[in-house]
Structure formats: structure tokens, C-alpha cells
Image (cartoon, rainbow, N blue to C red; front, side):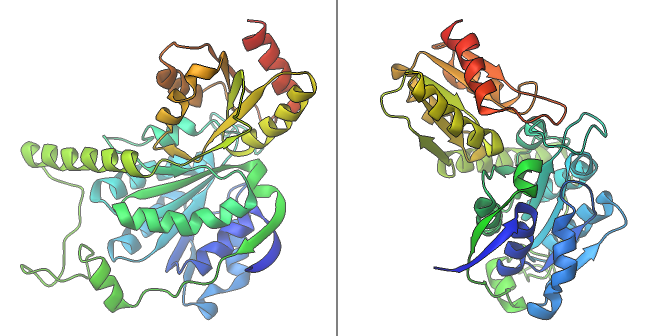
Length: 360
């Protein structure tokens, strides 16, 4: 067993970044994720591993620092919360267009606008549908525990470099602020410059046959070349969709109904399942772990046995659109969620199930 610690979700991400061999973290404080940079500043990872931690002058500066570091083949990371992520969107689009790997944490708070500092899941569209400009996608992981906040940093870097693509860990204020026991993974050494050249020959520091340094840019004024580049990106996203879908099924044997929920909402649904069982209602939970790629087929494979689906989110209803696309009208799909930073209770979720699905 690895080292055990009691940590906040945000702290677990920060420690995981150090242990994952990250070369640099560039961020800017914003509630409810400020503990990430606070932990890193206090921990002084430069003395432990050589990792650079820098508080930028703004969110825009931070994401462009990530762009620069990622372009040299380094493991680069940033984090923020909803309005801050909005400011990073242009840079994220540039990263995707240039095919640069990085890890981005979003600890979601309520909106739109400045909204509230309380938890939300209303950034689903922003994360999974692009958010910025152009035809691009991010790989999106949705942790439901402090343990996964740690584990997904390591996994995030692996997937980001495997596909040369930005990856977002889409958390929320509940998971970011709560404290749980975490089993920390063993530290991974930072790559040497020679290892980077070998593993990332595309980086600016990698040598090619034509020149001593590569030139990385998302700009191409030739429409035919730009279209071919976009087609290459689309093919990559298709490959990701075929190979990297992750989900969890809970209590899904012999059920009549199904919850679909991710992150903190999935934990609330697990308690709602217990309450439903006491009333003789047979319901299970499908928890998407990857939001892109979305587990469409996993939902479709369950349709022959269920009478209805309740999609539970802390939003007005965003993931529910992907669930409805998966279901294709074969069973009723309804949404339940609270907004404004209010976290729904298991009893509220059960009542919504009874009113919207069973009674509907």
C-alpha cells in the first residue's frame, strides 16, 4: 500500500502533480480551487523534484505559459475555476490546434458570470463541446472522490501525451474542498531533456531532418492545408472515442430504472439508491468517468432492461443532452438538478425519480 494522507481534493491534485513528474504549474488563485497553488507554494516542489510553480499575473498569462512549456515537451499543468477557465479558452484552443499535451483542472463553481463560489456542474458544455473556438475536443475526466483527484493527474498526463492533446479534469467545489483518505502513488521521475527528445520529437527542442528546432503553430493561412489538419484532428478524436471510454456501473443488476450522474452528483445518487431500495424501487447508477469520450454505448447496452433514466447534475441540464442522444427516444429520460450553488440531497433525488420517471 502507498502512502496514506488525509487531504482536500485540491491538495491531492497538487501533490499528485509533483509525484507525476510535472515540470511546471502555472496558475492564478480563484475560489474554490485556490488550495492547489497554495499547497504547491508551501510544498516548494522545486526543492523536491525541480518542478517550477509560478503564479501568473492572470489566467490568460497562465494558459499561455502552459502553451510555452508544453511546446518544449514538458509536462505542464494549470488549474482554475469556471470564470478563470473561460479566460483560458483561447489558449486551450491554441493548445488543441497545435496538438500540445497538458493537464487543466477546473473546480467548477456556479454561474453564469461571476455567479457564486459554491459548487456547480454547469461547465459540462464548456469542457466537452469545445468551449473555445474551432473544431477541437479535450479529453475530459470527471473525478468523484479525492482519491480520483490524485489518480487522474497521473492518468491525465499519460493520456495527454499519448494523444498530444489537452486534457481537462472536470471537478467541482464539493470534490475540491472535501477531505478524504488518499493513497498517494509513488513518485515518477521528471523526464530528462534527452528523454523528452526521444519521446516527443515533435517538440520545439526536438531535432528533425530539416532543421535544428521544430516550429509549432496552429496558424495556417492555406485553406487546403488547414482542412487537412482539421481532418487529422477529427481522426484523432475518433480514435480517442474508440479506445478511452471509462465508466462505472453501480448496482446495475436486475434494475427497472437508471441514474446517470458524474462527480459529486454520482455520490449523492448512491445514497439515493439505498433510499430507493428501502421503498422497493430497483435502480442503478451509471457514472461516466470520461465525459469526452462519452460512454454512449454503455448506456445503449442497458436500454433493454430499464423503464426510464434520471440524469442528475448540479445544473439546468447539460449532460442530459448526451444521454438523450444515446437513448434515441427508446426510454424516457428526465433531468434533475439544483443551481446557484445548492447541492441536492439524496431524498430530493429520489423524489425527483418518483415524480419525473416512475410517476411520469
